[in-house]
Image (cartoon, rainbow, N blue to C red; front, side, top):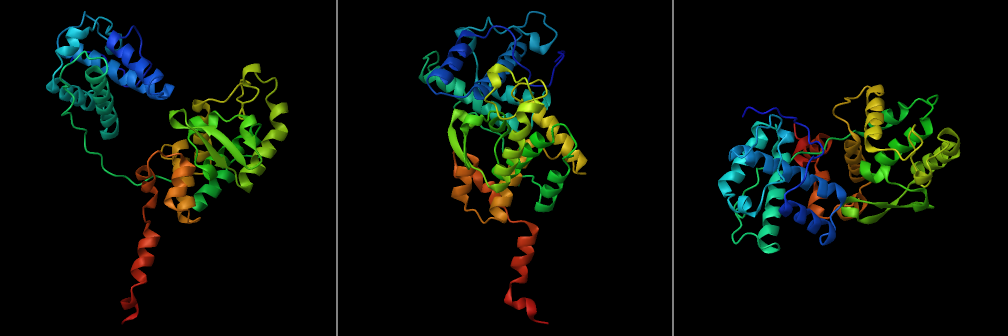
Amino acid sequence: MNYKFDFKDIAVNGKLPQALAEFLDYLSTIKGKSNNTIRAYRIDLSVFFRFLKIYKGKTHGEKVFEDIDISDIDDDFIRSIKLTDLYAYISFAQKYRNNGSYARARKVASVKSFFKFLTGKAKILKENPALELESPKIEKRNPIFLNLDESKKLLRSVDPTDHNFERDYCILTLFLNCGMRISELCGINISNIKDDTLTIIGKGDKERTVYLNRACIRSVENYMLVRGKKYAPISPTDKDALFISEKKCRINKRSVERMVKKYVQAAGLDQDKYTPHKLRHTAATLMYKHGKVDIRSLQEILGHESVSTTQIYTHVDDDELRKAVNSNPLNDIE
């Protein structure tokens, strides 16, 4: 393939095929999917159609993959798609876009959902070519997390003389104690904090309650004492936002990612290994291991739809394995 590829999942440009536009509208209005979910489907399926135009020799001389026009894809083109084309797309995702098993599994899910819509709702297809499309095998991996000492070290890495000390310390404290997602943290509003409870909007725009412990309450109170002074004048549209950026508006995910990376590095930890999401893993693991929180409660705290997602935190670490072996009554026999 003599095409230049941008291997980042950048925003999709250009007009969408009518069938894809209708599918995205269905996800939004009928299924109530979040904007992030709809954007992921849009990206995956736009890449899918661009690939098919190359694969079937239907391009118009474009040299950059992201510039390939897919607005002319009609129902006849969609009806020509076969199962072998779908497997070719997944192979392309692996070889040319360097997608791992998780990313390829997401693309398979996007394609299967799209063709299910075309067959069952839109009635564009009589038979579903994605029905037998298999997802790549995903190996189970234990979550990456900071241990208790490393977590304390990360909190101590925040310089008290830094202009953003109270804000940044509060952000790290909420990550490490509450296990919230980065999008949830950025979306916190002051009006949603009542005593020790915080209402946040989670994945799929679902609302849930997060309970704040003493460390969280103290860090929020300390930050609020300086928020109005250090970040004034705050943008009128973001006056209710808890965390404010240097630009005087609601902090965004990229700023939080950079901030976490800065303090991970300052703490002498692996800055490429420990991201905001790994701090979510850390909170969950510390609650499970040290707080003895049961798996169902942990599911509610993290906002997981299925308890099977939460079960990755039930992994037994080396200390527990060593303790189990040493508990064998034959251990004392010489």
